[in-house]
Length: 88
Image (cartoon, rainbow, N blue to C red; front, side):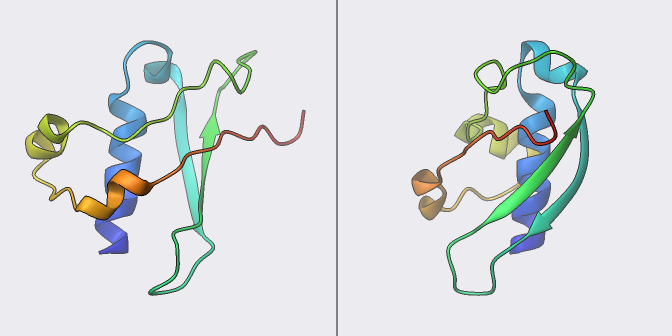
């Protein structure tokens, strides 16, 4: 389940329109255990001069999940995303 979610989140970042196509997706680190709220960090490469406000992250639409062949569970609607820039 978490593996599919990781692939889904990676696909989300890649499929986002506009500037996101220029971002490189790196490693991800899972900071939570089974049956705990998801706490995950995904590294982005080549962000250039983008600010945290310019990097938009959201859950893909049902149509995009269908196109990727991934089930979209209801609990995903409660996910919160935060962008934090490290090393600046």
